[in-house]
Image (cartoon, rainbow, N blue to C red; front, top):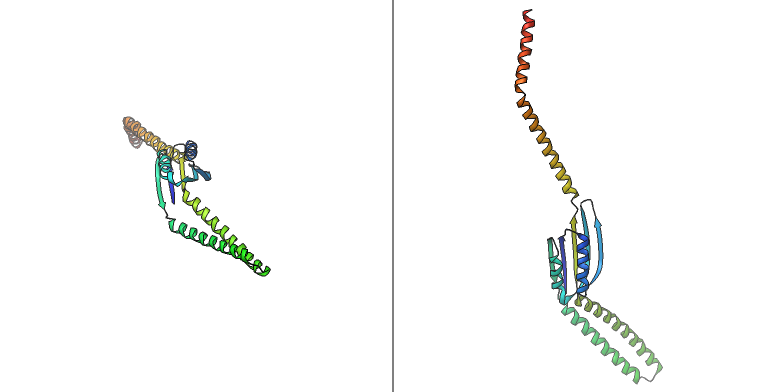
Length: 207
């Protein structure tokens, strides 16, 4: 039995969600859980898919090809053979016990014996049903593998902020340079103004 986790960035989450849905149907898989979240600068999709185990690797590859950038891809395998054999053996033993009780019930003559055997037979049948449910559940887990997919789209709000901030600094620096150039072009006027000021002060002192 395999389980996998796939995290990737996409340029359009809705397009990716539609693509995954189409792949899921074409692989005879099914979506078990789906969730969509949005924040100021990101949109996330979480999808849990049950995929036929025989086609699990091909499904993962098909989904991965649609990713813009894969952040994480992890596949784990768990061998359920021992557990399956153990449950199947229990079921076999319970059914053999059920058959023995049936034979004893057919051979019983006293009502008291019949009631006692029927009670034990009823209990064994309940145990058989419980083991069969466990076996079916395990078989379902073995036949289908689980892939948890998280894909997201950066909406660019934070990028736009830093871009605007950078533009503001650039404009401020440009204005500063223009101011320096303006001052450098007007240096003669500053010198002339200084000379006039000094001349005016000297003139007042002489008077």
